Picture (cartoon, rainbow, N blue to C red):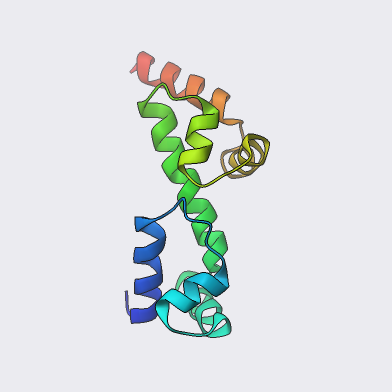
Length: 113
């Protein structure tokens, strides 16, 4: 990463994805202002810190759903969602299907191959 502060923020998000991060708490950990962090994320990643975190959490959730038999509620909690319905909505927005259907479709695809 060309920007040390963005790199530091990304490392924190990847290390602690279930932490209830806000732009303020992330900026505080990195040692920059919220506006500086947000501007640098937009510049280098074309995203906001929270937008990036949301997609990262959902990618992690997709991996857990396809590699374990944990319940959707367990997966939601593991990746930082306190509410299963909120997780379901976010997951469907990102992947086009709810988590349970994603899991069953992915398993069917792997069984065919």
